[in-house]
Amino acid sequence: MKTKSPFFIISVLIGTVIVTGLLSAGVGAVYVSPVAILSGEQSFLFMNFRLPRIVLALLVGAGLGISGAILQAVIRNPLASPDVIGITKGAGFAAAATIILFPSLPPVALPVAAFLGAGLVTVGLYLFAFRQKVQPATLALVGIALGAIFQAGIQFLTVRYPVETNAALVWLTGSLWGKDWSDIWMLLPWILVFFGIAMFLTKKMDLLQLGDDVAEGLGESVRGARILLLLVSVVLAGASVAIVGTLGFVGLIAPHIARQLVGNKHVVLLPASALTGMALLLVADGLGRGLFPPTEIPAGIITAVIGAPYFLYLLRRIQKT
Image (tube, one colour):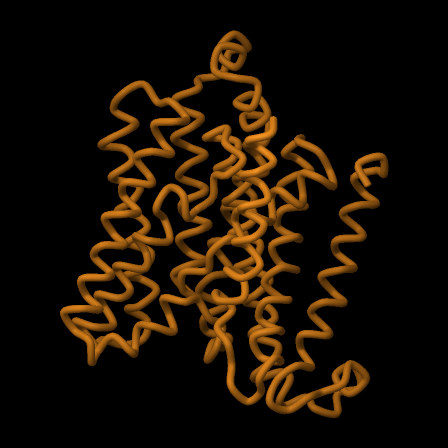
């Protein structure tokens, strides 16, 4: 497909997302055919329950896909993702602490706490990595260490408060269940604004891919570019995770699939990663609702089932090269 024009590939991805969204909208405890959706026969069910989930899956999939593509450029590691640098773990710990320790807080406190947890990871990365000369390996290792610390915090909370933990489990596995238009309006500005910023910084990502010496020789401030791009990635992933929980592997898989389709130029790779992330999350959410209705499997479990084998495939492929 890389022999095709980027416009053609992006058009195919857009068509894939539309078809996937239409099929996913019909899946659930009550099946609704695509014809019924298009004709408006089930407008109440569609507008109030199915459509918000579809739109939210589009926004979150795009945010995680773009975040992963940026991280892979910044760290120059094909296995980089928001999970690797601890963003999801930081958000998960803050959200779990809010649910377990402060159950009387209003629902809006949960995404705010999760976003602040992702921000704590950024502060940690600055303190332990950016104050020294920033190296890609340093960022990855510090992120893994921070993620392990926050994961230990989550495990402590689940052991210390076993009764209250049940309320946090759905969020920690990542799910679009129970989301409505208010969640969409909360997330939409972050995705739109920082996607625009990311597109403005695509040339910096292309230069970083060439190596530090080459980028500096071409007049790029490598340290400043890495800090700026990492902040954009953290905001996109943190905002997404803050709304739907700790979805794994989307930020890893989507950029890889997109890179196979459109190559490494980030002006095309970022939109392709966003569209691929949308399609992946739509499929995961649709499967979660449709496999065992009316019981719903959280989308995070589906993405883990899909992503873990793909991660092992990438690891084996990298070892061979």
